[in-house]
Length: 288
Image (cartoon, rainbow, N blue to C red; front, side):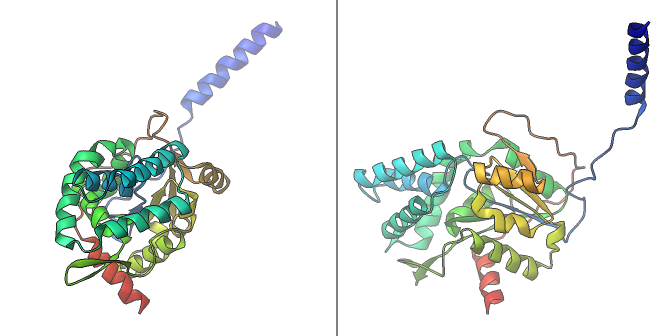
């Protein structure tokens, strides 16, 4: 009798579970919300590996520097891919190397080469899952920006190729269209990203509580904390712990886990392409 009673209770419970309506998550991104936007980190979030290292490979192919320099780039890229995190010392060394390499070259020349390097080394390294998230925002009629420590010229090429709105990136100084080997301000890294996003949101009239941000690195916690919809994408260990503590959404495309479906009706408009330089100007105006 006890077994029969247990079986009957289980049967009734299962019927109740089936009958109970499933709780639905609010639609996100919100279709037509023009005060919302999305901000995506680049390295290991949108693209596997670091854009600066792939760019270095392309410059080596074009004989911008020697084999010993390529070995350094290769080691930094291998470390980054294995560790899956940004090491400040490695990133600083990579930036210094890149600045010394491009010094004396024309900005227009590097922009043209950047287009070629994207096709050669970057296009096949875009994470499809993250690309789908960005497209969902675009389909909802929202602007989507890359926010990266990579040079703004590289970031702008990638943003344009992916059909995104534009990019915020590190700005290298140029005089009369020629690189000087120095930076304008600081690299766009860590808290500087949050400052840039805040400034761009003010210039664009965005409500950050309705915006989303995506990153793999704990270095970007300041940027992620600014918005109402933070996502940890392919997170490093520190970001994963922080995201779980804060109940942020996580997506990990490195393990083959299926990305959560983002259901959004197709929107007619796709964000218009805007250069990273325009974003940098907006940021500099805000700082003044």
